[in-house]
Image (tube, rainbow, N blue to C red; front, side, top):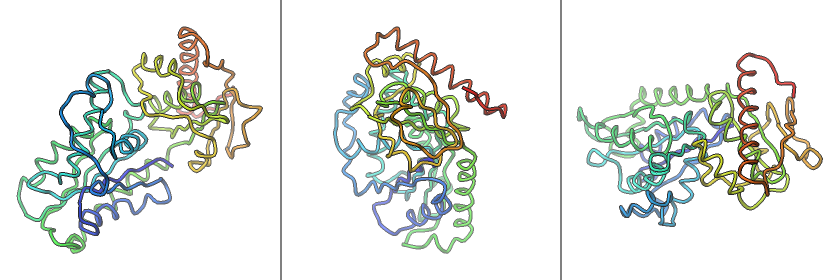
Length: 329
């Protein structure tokens, strides 16, 4: 059960943008976790153009955007619903878009990719009061580059005209059917994915690397998760460094307790990586044990060797699933 993030761009509650988002998400409730952010009700300051993110890799402003960054990187599908204001989006949503420059910087200035980025998708639902031919031209460009910045393939704008007052969109039955149908198409893709959980003691090294590699190489086939029996406070810096050498960004990822990820189950496969004697029993169709050295306290060269072994095992797992066979160990 992946995460679908809805960004409600309208400052008006109960309006046409909210109705459109509800219809689009109607079929997701049993197949994914849904989180909707009302950007007009979260304190997100405007980008200052200071270029701090281009030098340091993160935004120097600490506000409601911190949580949104985390959700962007966790989400499998991002749906933005917004009215058209002067051929653009409301200022509250534009602030979120502009502040996404920090993620753009990590990708294009630091050459780091979020592991989920090859498979994450983004779509925009827009509504305007007029019938203008070019009503959605401005936002199409805005969303194209916004979704690129946050690591999502842009699936286009579903735009609807002549809906200004609250509830006007409800009179456009074809629009509502189209929104529900398009959402359902995304749901079908969610259903096909196998759920894999990687578990180690601290969730600060081995299982984090395995999760990232599976998300990056096999995100079209798998939902990958990781957790620890005794999670550490943060990911080992050596692990972050060697994964960055592969171009994969573990920015904002944190160790997690096993109990916190069980909600994503049941799992098709659980892979333990050194915590067998202390790991709780987890509901799964099958399990594997990857006997890998703990990277904690090891030199960078040893951590690289562990990373490469994990990458090899993950690629083997993907190949075997594609071939319809099962890994034996």
